[in-house]
Length: 71
Image (cartoon, rainbow, N blue to C red; front, side, top):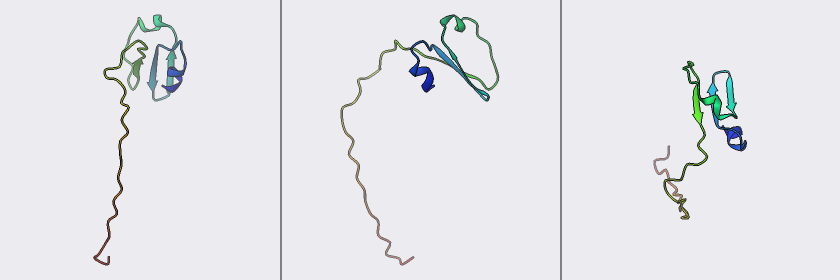
């Protein structure tokens, strides 16, 4: 999937038990068929984000627990 995202011509990817196939031509997607164990992902480069990215920083805390049972 990362390779498809890096390629500006990639339009889809098929992921299966033997590896993956990148589709670089939109006409590859006109014929569809079922193949057991293969998942087909279509890349939509023009989709809009549903919400703006957050600019907030999340604060994390760490707490220590002391074992007073002697175990």
